[in-house]
Image 1 (cartoon, rainbow, N blue to C red):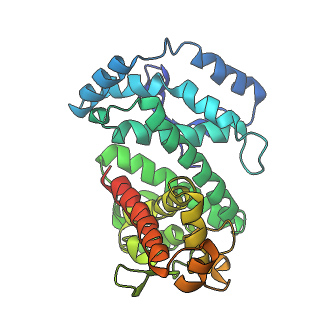
Image 2: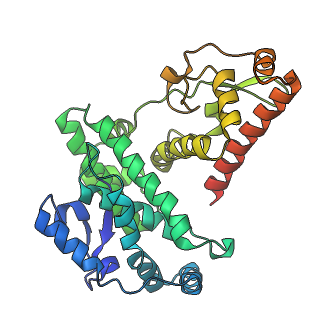
Image 3: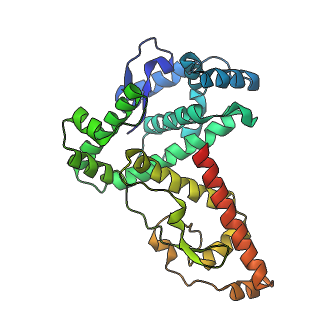
Amino acid sequence: MSGWIELSEMGNDEKTAVPIGSVFSGQRDWTHHYLKQLGHCGKLLTFEEEKALAKAIERGDDAARRQLIHSNLRLVVSIAKKYMGRPGLSFLDLIQEGNVGLIRAVDKFDWRSNCRFSTYATWWIRQAVMQAFAEHDRLIRLPGHVINGVSKLKRAIESEKRRLDRMPTEAELAQKLGLSQKKVRRLMQAMHKPVSLETRVAGSDETDQALGDMIPCETDSIEALLEHDQQKTFLHLSFKTILNQKERDILQKRFGMAPGGSPVFGSNDVDHQRWTLEALGAEYGVTRECIRQTEKRALAKLKSAFLHQLEG
């Protein structure tokens, strides 16, 4: 798993970074020990305290960053509990991945948004957990030696990111792991299942383009590969939460998606008959132009949410 966290961020004076899963590896006693540790996290932060810490983080205050993380570890546990019992990840795996989302939320939080940090962090924590389930489903279909290689690569990426304060290059990862750049590139590819984004969507002038064109994908960039799945997950979540039922129904029928599908999860969702504007107009008892405007508005919502997430 990719969830590494500094012990100093969990109330320990040591600066060593370790994977949580290796410390609490499937032992109930250690689960209890970890949860007991959270009892020492102190009181919940007020809105003003959150803003003060976020301002300090913006100025480069590492102590404030650790405090904001430390004060919200219990939020991760409360969210992780909701996913317990699903196959693939243990409770501590869920906490580990949730902590990754929490750290990302801390690094991206903007105190000017006038939003409570816990509200903002909840989305990132859930996204990290959902991403972990998707990743597990991919990895269980890979040979054992590839899984081991991917795990080592992910640890190296996290380690080098902390050391360099940036995303490492392929050459740096190859040197760290003692592998060729070609081998590192293959392991990077193994981390991500190919997904069809060939669903055609209508532009403002009724011309079609692939929805995948909305997602920038620089295949030579390690950071782009790592971000790619999160972007698709974000679009999927946006489709389910930002659009109303009518907008979802129109997009699903216009682009031939299976009922309940979304425009980002593979070709199996797009094998159904595509509805014309006229047919949908008759279905809803409105004009063709009304359907076109609803479709355009729904796509604009998705694009706006996606661009806002990229800029955030």
